[in-house]
Image (cartoon, rainbow, N blue to C red; front, side, top):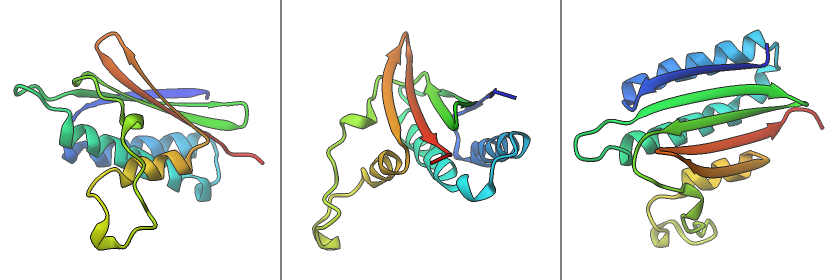
Length: 138
């Protein structure tokens, strides 16, 4: 079992479907449950960003999620057919600033970048592709 793939409409009601997909992958790959939370949080953050910001002119994006196990790590790829958007270009939030002085937004992507070992964005044809990799072994 190296990889799995699924797709859903960009609707918050589909988040449990994606979470179950991730949990089933984790179980089938016999990965330690304690290592799943960064992937669960990253999936939720990125998917909800597409739900919140990806619709345009009445079009609801299609989101595809791929999970691949290779060389001691897992790569999760989230693709959508929404308008071009590279979340990695968002300004880094000032997490040291007092709460009342912080800008709204951007914290989810910040967390994803810090929980994963490698995060990359590409525009592939008409699709946004965010790839997140984390080593599971020291």
